Length: 291
Ligand SMILES: C[S@@+](CC[C@H](N)C(=O)[O-])C[C@H]1O[C@@H](n2cnc3c(N)ncnc32)[C@H](O)[C@@H]1O
Image (cartoon, rainbow, N blue to C red; front, side):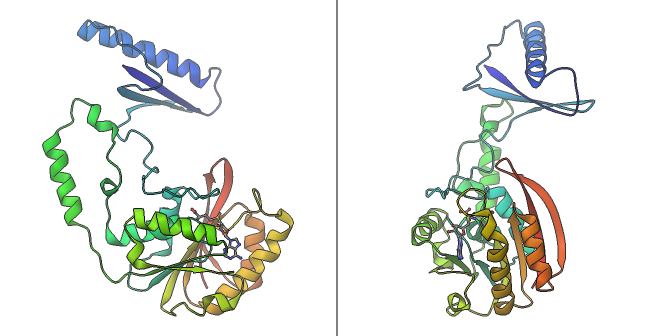
């Protein structure tokens, strides 16, 4: 069985449903001609998933080799209500340049996604440590020997050293959840958890001054917080973090970009890089700064 997942970007006089229908009937026709078999469509649990993307005047067709989206890493057992997508967390980690030699901090860590992604990156943890289901296994080109060989190489690549991270959140419940996620993500040994308010300098007393990499996903003020309070909240946070970790690199993602830009500029923090991304239907901006 198969399914076509169609997407469309640009202005056209047809819909993505039309794209799916036309590509689907093309596949049935061509398979019938070459194999003499009429393929069946199964939209819920297809053996093979075909992607058809119409982007302006291009049509790109591909086979889904990953199966479920790769941002579903499967280590997350505590689901924070505003959890960051693992892939975006990984972007923040890369941007800030964490290499494990100096410490890492997420001062509003929620369920710990960014800290876990940071440690996975420096330890070279492959996804296969947590996830076993991949779409390529259903394809004819799948070769178990090749897969075992690659898996072994990846497992040999793991490097566990003295890397350390700090995970702070104001909510004891989220810190408990972050501990569960770190345990399931096999990085509990490298994380120090602190319940505290990151807009207050006392919170950072227990933290080593070896922190050189900071990444966070602060509240945007859209879901649970009062949007009117966000500018003041960002300002107090930026002031405190700069006082505590002057010279450190900080990457962050927020849907309240104006408030963040004002706070950074008030404390003379220059933006090294910034770009827009979509996060759960919200347009959000990622920033890299040096404190
Ligand atoms: C958007 S969530 C972070 C989600 C996290 N990146 C994840 O993937 O699970 C923002 C977090 O900031 C925390 N927070 C809000 N105000 C804070 C403060 N003053 N100090 C520390 N944490 C705070 C909230 O409790 C919440 O967990």
